[in-house]
Length: 198
Image (tube, rainbow, N blue to C red):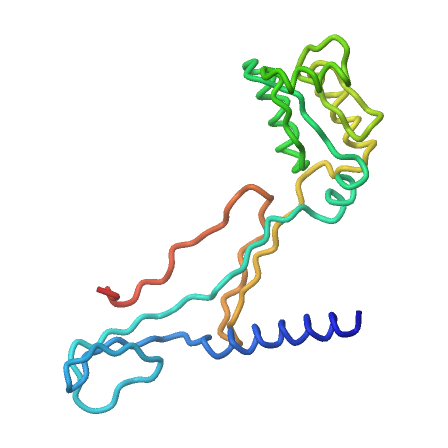
C-alpha cells in the first residue's frame, strides 16, 4: 500500500513538473536566417522574418464523474430504467434521472430479452418501470413516487457540480470558471494571437 501511494505521489509530481515546464504564456513563430520555421517560447534575437506571437490561455481539466453521494448511492442501490420508444412518458422518465444526475442502466423492453427481464421485476410487463436496488420498484411513470424512491436511496436532488481546475500554470493562471452542473459545458473563446500555425 505504501509503495502504491509513493508511486501515485511520484506520478502526480511528474505531471506537475511537466505542466510547469510548458506553462508559458507567449509563443513565438518566425523564419530564421536559414529559412527554417521556428516555434519557441523565447523571443528571437537577430534578423528573423515573419515574426508572430501567440498568447496562450490557461489549461483546464474538467471531470464529469458523479459526486460522492451519487456514486455511493449507485453502489448500494443501482438504478435500472425499463423503457422503450413510448413518446413523452418514457422521455420524461429518462429526463428525470438525467436531471438529478443519477447513473442508471437502460433495458429496452421492445426487445425479447428486455421484455423477459421486465416481467421478472414487474409481472404486468408495462413500461416504463424504475428499479432502485433490489427492493424498490415503481411501475409506470409517477414523478413524485420516483423522486421519493431516489431520495430514499440517498441520491442527491441535483447533479454534483463539476470543478474546472487550471492546470500547468503558475501565478498567471486565469481564475477558473464558475462550477457548472454535470452534463453542461462551460467554455470561453481562446485568446487570439497570430494566425499560425499555417
